[in-house]
Length: 391
Ligand SMILES: *Cc1c(COP(=O)(O)O)cnc(C)c1O
Image 1 (cartoon, rainbow, N blue to C red):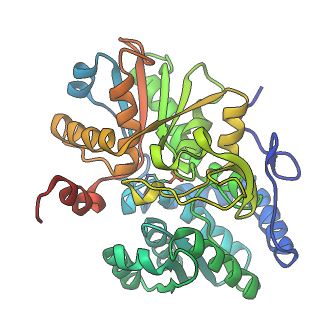
Image 2 (image 1 turned 45 degrees about the vertical axis):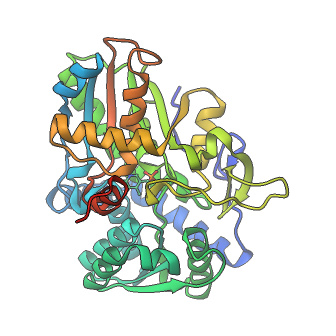
């Protein structure tokens, strides 16, 4: 049986997912679903998407066996190197797909929301490449915290709109982007950055990210003489790099493990609820108010998680663990020193889990594939500050 196939006709993965949007956005979601479904079964579209990711995006990204790190832990670790993709993370896979769909729908403008700025930069990149207008909504507090990414978006020709409502962070930027989408849906596509939002987004974004898992399966089997790894580990913010990775391995015997930040553990500590267009696990208080997530990595600072992860957890196909800020910082330093690879703080959560559980949940001698979702350059300042170094 195919585990990570399409969702139900109403966009559900078990009891999760769906399409909870204002009436005025239903036609846009239906149009997107139809255009995506036809494009994804059109070999010319798929070829165009793959060609851009090859010639522009730097795919396929390699799988690297990290030998010194493995020796230290007593387990054999392989990294899927999304840090080497254009713009420094897996996000390019999704935005190229959605920008191509935007053109296919005859629309001329992309809007996006961003927290740490990485999805905003990726969307602005795809918009520049394909000659689309681009507007990015960002909480006022994040605009101040992420000045470098704001400037990168401007260089790429995007306009950045600071959002001053609510907590002035990511969830408010999402609300504002939804509002703008309602107002300009004839010309505008809303480019969601993870496996979240109303149907078809969680499914569509997973399909655009499955290139990570599909490539990795072939590459790692090549290195393991035809075997699949015992464990496949990825960090989970909204959950797109994990979903794309898991999609390649869901029908194998590999154990799938998602790692959330301890202060934003939506699957581990959340309660099912509806937010931003779909039903999934969510950090909320007794009366249903959404709680703020806290993490050392701004890219994982989100109180919700994609619905398919709630589903995979509910059927026991994937397990979800957490890593705390201290473990993450240690993991980043260890991998940097032993392998010359500085991970972003997000995938450092996945690395931290492997370090902590090697010889425990991950028995000695196991083989482990970890998705290195992005490079750490963007986090150098944060890490320096915590370590008390000045740069
Ligand atoms: C944005 C980001 C993430 C979190 O997003 P997911 O949808 O959970 O993959 C993880 N790693 C990096 C490097 C990112 O930029």
